[in-house]
Length: 103
Image (tube, rainbow, N blue to C red):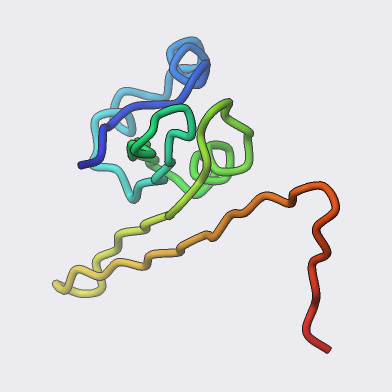
């Protein structure tokens, strides 16, 4: 189950750079889902965002012990709710490992 929160120091940054109250209390347009790499079960942390600029800032900054897994963007087209989910795969390269690329 996902825990809602903001990784690391972003919570302090968000509090010091407050958004206007109308935007802050509106429904988020999406979520960035991070996996905590410092827990054995890779707990999910869902971070809401209200604009594309905020999404870019959240997803492009490195968060200690957090790995970006998914970005979910919500939209209403007419009266129909839609969403787009972008998933990311991450891996690490061990020393001495050769990574082969397709031709």
